[in-house]
Figure 1: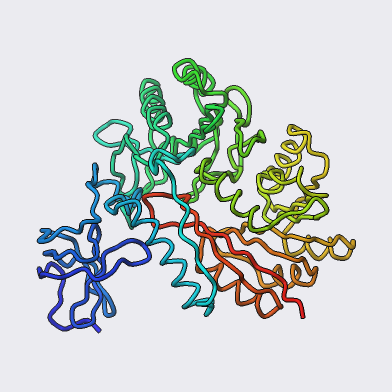
Figure 2: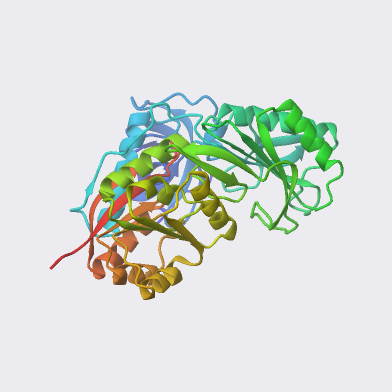
Length: 457
């Protein structure tokens, strides 16, 4: 409970004892937790309370009395204020340890499997400027178009031009596109009144190909001089091969609308991953850190110990990056995905790479698994790479009924993965090892792979 004397704006001296799973410093006042941005374990700090709830509060540092040896200089505090790079004040080696510990915690507390080894986190050699995709809100400030990012827990935009974790070519393209739109007097979206025209600028850039896609998310379909603007974007940014208008007329914080128009060039970019070429369209799921995605997949394939006779299922297949990376090493790959465009892309990607032993279908993973089981398709290895909410219980049951030898679970949310490992265990599948991989350096997010094996009596 909140000690009675703690109130908003109160100042006090505290010692940081831990980091929360989001990377906030944790201090305790009579067992009451305070969460503090930009504070590291061991540091003594003066803080001002900004919120005092009944069970915990938030405070901000007003003065640092001692400094942790693990502290890194932060070049721009806005990276912390917006949550773009909330761990950038922590030395990178310590970020990797922190992520390994976070995964170990959920394996103990949620999965109740402290015996499962959590390996050291696989890090990056250069853990900055890695993102191959940006989704940047556009607003008007003092009569000018502004691009940046929202202050944490708000919709107030903070102008930013160097996003630190993004490909610098994307950062400079955002500024250039904003200037071009300014010349054409394009109005920015006003969220409060649901008026104005331009909501977001989205850019994808191929890590290897350097092809660039620009998506302009607009509130209305009619885009006066849209094609002319797209031509100028291409002229001023030669890497651009695709300019798309995405129309989102809803009053919502969902970024993309249903309908799109190609204003210039093609509807996709190409890039390479583990030697294969992929078509990536505006709505395709594609890992935002190409180099680390390659490391993630390599580790997943190592754990799977694939054989040339194996039949593999690639559930939540996206555009086919997992299945197509291993197709040439196995007998057949079957993939499923609910997004129709992604399945079209996956089938195209198989053709582009001369892969004939891969079959991709549109459908929910749990439903398709049951259909394949009825068709007597027996999988040796199942790869799953679900969204943050994890797997449906019906999918876990359908997978275990198929009796594959191994399930390789790739997760972007260790907590839901830990929950799902319990369901696998109840169905006779045991987690053997967990490998964290740092796909999102400078943030608290961690991707990990669990090898799950069928118990043999």
